[in-house]
Image: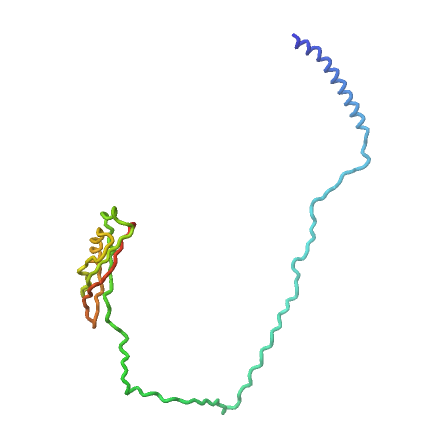
Length: 200
């Protein structure tokens, strides 16, 4: 009930204050309308840039460079009897008919046994557990006149587990036989080292 009473008593006061403010503003606006502008203060601003066309290329008269004149040709010889004189002494050619020279044929057919086919050894699976990362086997064998490997034997090894694999690989190799006086000869005591590495 107090709220309604306060609202009813405050409403007329608010109306009176609003009316007084309205009248004051209306009087101020009516006074502003009497002022007139005497001068036109508008300013014209042009922001476009005017560029003047300039000639970029000037045509100039092309002048060819002056080249040096070539030298005059040498005078020609009109005397038909003119011949340059040449003096030389010719030495005697030595006589090789009595000399005994042995220059050979330039070709020596003799040769040592040379490998033609070398099959690499297979890494044995049973040796992986007790083998190092690098193992080697030194093998000695003979080569027949037909080029076959015989009498293969192990001279030294870092691991005895690899001896059998090394011998099997060497026995499958093929050689060109040793040649002496155009005849194939057996070659004894050929040595080689076979290596085994993990990961090959």
